[in-house]
Length: 569
Ligand SMILES: [Zn+2]
Image 1: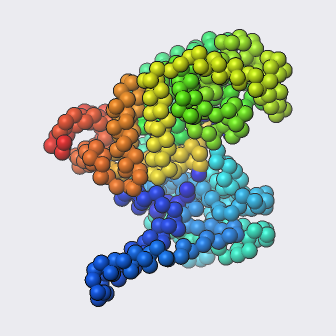
Image 2: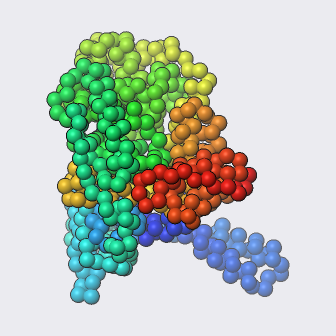
Image 3: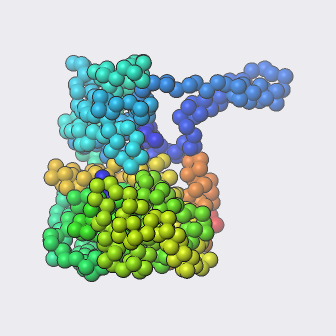
């Protein structure tokens, strides 16, 4: 991915991390049901003719309860403010705010700002302010105040006031300025309570012939450094060979200990998630060349759209998530009804179903190279200049318009029919990554690529910030979901689709209502809790009848193997 956020309060997120997430209801419907349920319990205590009539009255009253209408003008609710890193937050964290107002789409964003103040006994103290822009792939109006509040020296509960349009510059569309202000209580744990591994982590670098690797001391990347440097060298060589380019400068590669987005992103440097419980499951043999392609294709590109840049990266790597026959798998998209016409795919590439979009774009690159040759492909790739359309570029370079080229592309796909197993694999791939993203939305919204935050590791390293690159959900339920997703990823890599589907059923059941009632999910949760009871954090779990084999860590990145027995079948 080349980088160019449902929001809730950190306190709410922390509560959810401690307990189970709520059902996937909108906030208003949740409130409405809560009031309904409390009324139901009150009614059940009244003397009614019968318990049944009570229930009927209560249900009727629930059905008739009017849903309060949200404000129609610009407004902010507490749940619209997210704080990173975490939760939890520790004293000394440098906090980033994500503030996503309602009803701002039609407003002049240049005039819209936010101000965050800490409420102290001496009065409000401004701790952060900035403009509302569109910093994420979802294009939602949002103020992202990056590394804005240094909490060093503060401890315990902090009262914050977030003020949208604090100088009242917006009039039309903001008829009620009073609903632009929210107050939050943020809890800062003592600095000394920070986990030892995080407290001791610092950025270090290793330089190889291709790359400068940046990683955190004590991390899995530090543990596996020799293998990682070798893989980086191989990936750089592959990219140079496939792009017919010679590297002119080393690539900066940051290896971080949490999943962000789909596990990798590239801007001024490449950032890869490298951790044992990598539920995004990305194979470094593909992920490294993918992101290195983004860092290397500059001499070939000229206004090139994301659609082709991502397609080239997948094509160079030989697949998106695993080595894959790109034409056959893209042809499977047609059979599954997931093919998107090319002109639509060009528009807002990142808003389309992620896996399908990447696969189709890779197939289009493969088609151009195979059918028209490398030089003509390069002419297309570098032919966009100032916002030229795909149709115009194809006419200028291939002498055929988009309609004709796409028809030929579809014939080429039809000439590569997928096997039933390939079709099922593509369907399961899409289903698995959709589940990964639903997990992120519910349990780790900062990691969700569409609305979350891709922190700049270069700036993070410069400022000595590590928390945003390693802190991640560690509640038992999060870990259980992550190890189930990881098991599904391993099944996908091995072509073991029944394992993928069995685990996805369990994950989807939990994500549906936030409850661990699916038998497989119950077993995974029991294993994670049993490991935690002995001081271990489960990183990978293999269930086997009534027992489990667990790869876990304790105080450092050393993996130990555990056996957990006595599980219900
Ligand atoms: Zn990419």
